[in-house]
Image (cartoon, rainbow, N blue to C red; front, side, top):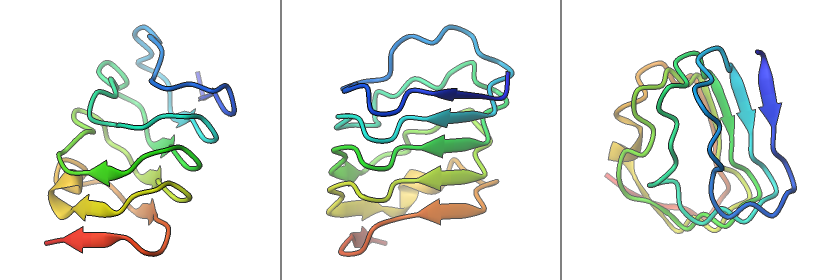
Amino acid sequence: MCCRYLKDLGLERLPPLGNLHSLEALYLSSNRIKSVENLSLTGMLSLRELDLSRNRLTTMSSPPFKSVKLRKLNLSRNYISYLDTQSFESLPHLEELKLSTYIHVHM
């Protein structure tokens, strides 16, 4: 399975997607997701691209993406006012990170 589009559905959290071991891209843009701390990506071993743009995210204070090998992460057009650099320590394969302006990065 290549990708799953769950765009503009009014989602507040990620619905159970089952074991999508072969999913390579997940597009969750234009929803109402407020937090990624409880975002369950367990079992998505092939996930390389995650789009969380145009949601209601406000902070990234802990490493939310574990056990995935993301290469592209889009967090643009959210309400992120605080970003801890440790949020990305668990993403050694990350090549592209899209962010909006006016984000305070804590190092």
